Amino acid sequence: MEGVDSTNISAQVREKNDPGWEHFSLIQDASGKKKYKCLHCGTIYSGGGINRMKQHLAGVKGNIGACKKVAHDIRHQMQENLKGISEKKQEVQESRENISIYDDHIIEEENSYFAPRTSSGSQPSIKSVLASKQVVHRADMAVARWFYDSCIPMNALNSVYAQKAIDAIAAIGPGYKLPTYYMMRVNLLRDCREECKLLVEAHRNSWKETGCTLMADGWTDVRSRTLINFLIYCPRGLSFLKSVDATDIKKDANTLCELFSEVVEWVGVANIVQIVTDNAANYKKAGALLHEKFANIYWSPCAAHCLNLILKEICSLSHVKDLATKASKLTILVYNHIFLLSWLRKREGWKEIVRPGATRFATTFITLKSVHDHKHDLQALITSKYYSDSKLAKTVKGKEATSIILDNKFWTSCLIMTKISGPIIRLLRIVDADEKPSLGYVYDGLYRVRKAIKNLFKDNKRLYKPYTSIIKSRWDSQFRQGIHSAAYFLNPTFQYDRDNYCQKPEVMQGLIELIGNKEVCSKPKDAMMEVRLFRDQLESFGKPLAIKLATEMQPDEWWRMFGSSAPQLQKLAIRILSQTSSSSGCERNWSVFEKIHTKRRNRLEHQRLNDLVYVRYNLNMRNRYDFHLITLKFIF
Figure 1 (cartoon, one colour):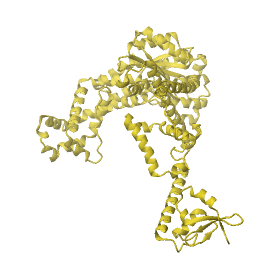
Figure 2: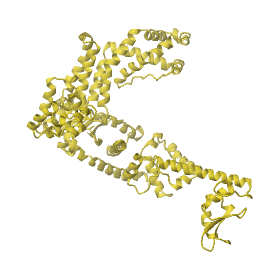
Figure 3: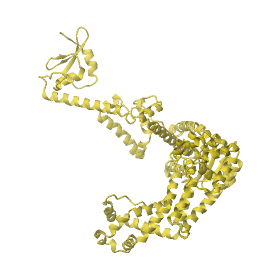
């Protein structure tokens, strides 16, 4: 069959720069059917496309006959080309199979005007797949030069917004101009703040349903300005409200109460369950004045701060201080002499010794535990010929360290202090976290701490009294809040644990005071009648599933599921058990201030500093909440 060379069609395909077109041509017969003709042997094929012709030139058996006139180097070129095409197809197929529910959620939630091709497991675009390594490397180098020239921290690449920014630029294409200094500093910051305001406003419905905790904490910046942070906690997450420059105001109880009242009225008086601050006398008095003004809002001390103070007072005991000094001498000896550290690091299962922090009292006890865990390694070191032959073993410090390591009393004391501080540190980790409400665990945690210390010393009052007296002093002066004991009573995890439940009258008294407050419970008589149903496991509380899940579910969620028989008590329990017990979120927010308000940027006016922190914190809050939603969707 005679064919006519269709140069116009062939030219369109050649524009793709596909290797191999110089060895065959595209032709059409009289009916318009496309065929391929080998320029070496003249063979014509009507099906299979370009790749089949490449197989003909490469000598691939099976689908088509091999060309007998093609040169060896051309045959090798076609074989390598087919191999590359096969590898690219396999990569694309694997990326399609790896698309997960998580990525689908991201794509649905993004609502952007361009296709998200860069999330994990998503199908890459054809353009990005066909881009050569040199082109990708050139783009990477451009980003790297920007980072190195501006001293941008490398962890900026871990931001969830980094790839989104690159995608948005790529969607516009070449020629995109970065925003000017003024736009970034004023216009775009204003727009981002308005965007974050919408995020905070979206949480208002949650504040009405579950109630919220107002958190306040003071701080002094590098310019000696006194700043007070205000954050709102609810089960959906933390929201940063504002930072107030309190440098020029007198920070007495009345002034602080007026400041708190302004924030309370903006959030909504009915939405706030409690205000949590540190334990300073002026904040405590301001909290009491606020409760007098708004009867439904209670003041609570920061539980994390109280526990840190308990650990501080235990650290100040003479025998504990002496023990910590000895442990510190061991860590200094090891980490100041590299030949000892090198020998220890070669031992199987070696982990670095935790060293105490200057302002974190819990690290002292964590260090004692870490040193005790390395008991056998340290004893093996000082009894080895490697150490005894060294000059260090003959020095005063070396002999002192040897006597400490070989002293069994030292190791016994380390173990005892580890067991004393263990329950306190575990409770500190619970109240210091933002992910789960912790108010319902404070009373039980301190009750169990005292009980564990007494059991450790087998109820020998002379031995346990120094520790329990410190805890009792803090408990009586700060933790004996009615809202804490009421939360303990309403927590089914502890209420239905009959063997370990605390039967002290103050527990029921705290609940009665809370229910008796008409600003908190509109129908106190009905709520008190419903207490019996919950306590005695009647009606919906007596279902086998409810009793089984009492220790497995979050208390507030448990009440939503099984509290239908007691609607008034259910509403109260959900509001109380949905709250946090510490203001640690405020303290963690100071790290954001320190990153933004550095020595080089210490002339930032307060409003712009406030806007930068507001945007940074609330964007991060949205990411954490979205991640939890994605995780739950993936699980269920």
